[in-house]
Image (cartoon, rainbow, N blue to C red; front, side):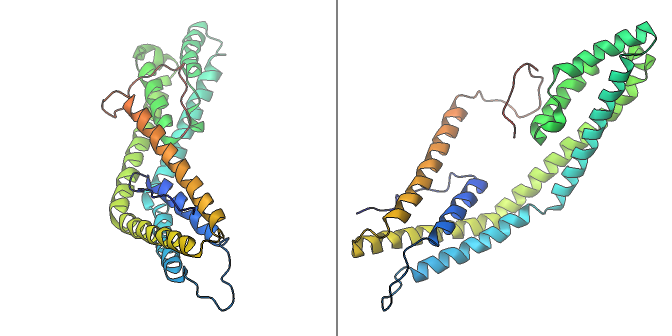
Length: 260
């Protein structure tokens, strides 16, 4: 007789755990209906699971409404504007009538051209690109920068980049506090309710022995298989990485990384 596999959910990230529950809850609607005159053997555990997930869902969605998220979005918009405006300025200066200024602007423009456009990236990748770009820009002699007033743009872009990094850290700290509090407790309750429900499905499926729960069991097992594959892939990737700090360091601009 088919059974829902045991699955330790503690290693899942919050978004993975939330997604798993969301898909299981949706599939519950496709369980075979209780025939007239029969007892709904899954009623208590099913309703408890749905109730616990609803509470988890409410807490999870609330995390997205943190004030820090709005601050981060505002900081991102400002640094996008600073980057775009500075690049427009340098591209205009590449056509300056003065040859010396035009030559310097062309050198700076080539630095911009080396890097992927950061405004199209996720926050972390965007910050890394901006840091690398600024490091190269700031390596130029100040006299050359002043000749076309580009030192002002570098300062402006640097200030907005610092603000983005600060906002990103504050959001991470806020989400961390949230995760340790209501997200943690509601997730644990939803996980436990799922385990009770899955165990009950196995008992009922085994007792009735008519295969009517097979489709649901196969579906949940497929979700579990996918989550296990994700965990295994992440563990493999992690083991191949070298230990080190998490500060932003220069990277080869020719390398490409997946978007956030």
